[in-house]
Image (cartoon, rainbow, N blue to C red):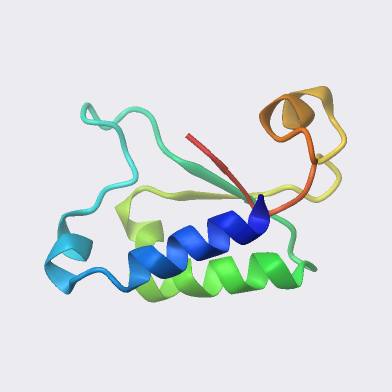
Length: 90
């Protein structure tokens, strides 16, 4: 799953700049945000975070969540049965 997320963000990174300017990580009413669950020590998380920061998605409503110690909880496993990071929550 984390490789798919990296590939998705890389493909998104290659979109024309005009699309990047209009992109939003919030719902239409601005209430629901996408959350990116990462582990600070994970190389996979570092790759995704580099793309997120390069695109400026933190400023567009993407919430970065530290998942350290939370990947084995029932709530996280319901979201991602493989309990690995990074995980994108819509």
